[in-house]
Length: 118
Image (tube, rainbow, N blue to C red; front, side):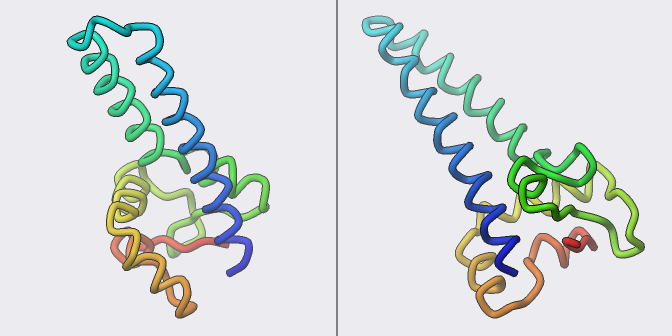
């Protein structure tokens, strides 16, 4: 449980730093607001894609790799891309996910995607 939380925090910090860097785009396009918003949405979509598929390599995100845990399907095999997407998109309802983790339950994403963290 503690490893999952630490892995989540590591991944979250990395994403926050990436989004902070996105804010730097404004510095480079000070007067062209149309260009700024185009670049903003391109980067936003790219970061969302990366986040939703962060566990693709061996079932591990950077945080999971550091904490030596990984996502597998219920049979212990590598989950499909679809299952990883389903698992990670549920983070958009993070209060539910956090509550389930604090109650020492499986994340909603794991339940829906039929995955587990080992």
